[in-house]
Length: 296
Ligand code: MLT
Ligand code: MN
Ligand code: ZN
Image 1 (tube, rainbow, N blue to C red):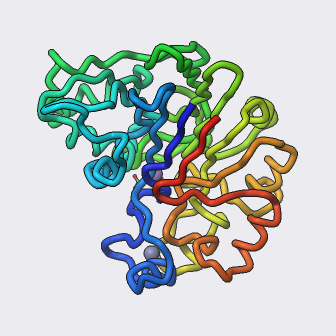
Image 2 (image 1 turned 135 degrees about the horizontal axis):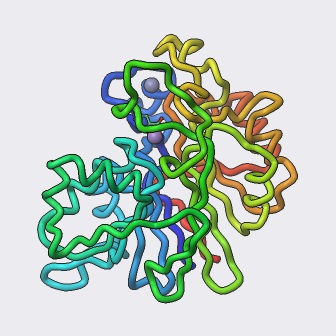
């Protein structure tokens, strides 16, 4: 199985258009690499690919990835797109995939309902783009040798679907999923958004050879502390790395290669000389970057 991180950043990317925080400023100066928004491509043979989440940056992501260039006059090696939720940073790229090339869009029924209810996604010609619902804990094969099992993780509905009432984060259902992707005896697990790590989820994640996990924030109050916002990580549906219930502690027993992805521009792990970066690396974690590749 071939795996390529197309975008390592969270919503907004790095630098974010309207942000001048320490990390965004460092990226603008060229001191740290920029990051596009969260997306991963996987392949069973190098010729046919599945894109996990369609980021707003997909046009540049495909341009930067020769394996995803058109093999003929019109066409694409992309056979399918799989969504893990309906967030803007995971669905806006679908609008770029118009222009009459066939692929299959896989998502849970509740996420497909959101896509189908919005007329702008009608740019995906139904004669070419089939939308196929996937069910929790039920494997499907978007490529002949690749089997994907979707599973629920604690999360919340997309920001633009939040009503006026109180928002529940940590809901478990069809709106936020992780993907366990198997080829032969190898498993790669992709969880770009996750609000909490109960024991059963930790047990499931322990079964993979490679894990890409939610690295949005270092600490729950990061947006407040960096002065850019008021929401906590938990309120956004993202578990922090740090703290007694954070992902570093909760996933410390895993033997898999562990990679943080969907890293928000406020996260101090992005700074090479930060204390937080040293802690994460000392615990064996890697940080995704745009173009990072693995082969299992
Ligand atoms: C998130 O991951 O929390 C979302 O991408 C936030 C957003 O929609 O801006
Ligand atoms: Mn996001
Ligand atoms: Zn910033």
